[in-house]
Length: 402
Image (tube, rainbow, N blue to C red; front, side, top):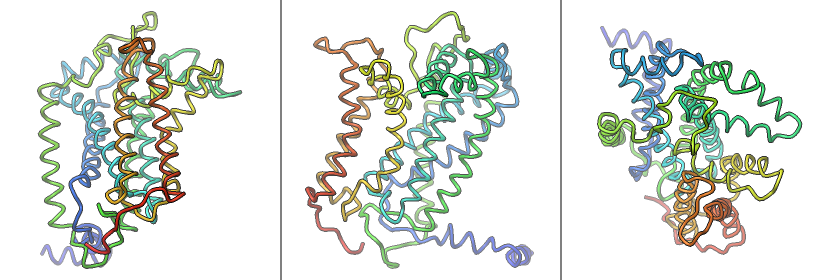
């Protein structure tokens, strides 16, 4: 009976054929390592975020007077509301952990190179949307950090010439962050994850059109591929199991580890926190924003452009890397630059976490460290282009087949 039903469906909609060609029998490079697990993990966390978000919306009140109390109601009165809220809040943190690893893996193994430019661009657009969605969600609990974070970040739009001030008023829905702002942010935060889900579908479509890259960064022959199932489904399930152990450890034993304590204080427009700090996944870009403070009246605009440019530069990365070899595994100089870039990102995060007026050992203002780290960040892309454009880097021999 089941075979007859499937035959009837396949005659009208080839579901079985699609599952075979795009999933179970999809040709996959046989040398993929565990760094390739993070793409499927990101998809899994996206499903968690959408599912928990839908249930949280049933009890959340997007009202400046009621928002904070509604979150407390979810935590205290709704059955398993605390679990939903902590899954959603910590899910955002682990989402960005997987996304950052996914991006860095693509950079290291040259997954942005021809013919995967459009695949890479979809990923960068997704990253932009995830940053925006996370910021909007951070505002919704309407605690002190939520309110003042919204005030600081939205006020950056005033740096845009001519239309900046009007744009800020339009974002706020008035002349300060208030109830209209919260309603707009709530609406967008609920909408954007579904836009992200649609773009993830396009991202996967683009991936299947050009097929997966591999650690060696070489074009593969048919004999170098194996079916996705059962080899990589088992591998993905193993990675998922490890992820769930780590995720549940934080969820049940340290749910507030990544959350800001000041955000458990209700928003008060009359009391500014001592140190306004964004979530950890924004800190490197926040440090770049703050480091551009030496241009007088142009500092705000330059900082906004630098912060946006730190992500936008990823769009042109496929054209900056001119090496004939994709993978950094065979490019010693590019590999050294990559590790410097990675360490520098952690330095930027540390700079962003500390107050702008703090100093480090030797009395050096931390803003100087931020400027140097920002220069190293953008310098990576310049040096990558320079050493590959002029043949300074001499890649090692690359195998022709696996």
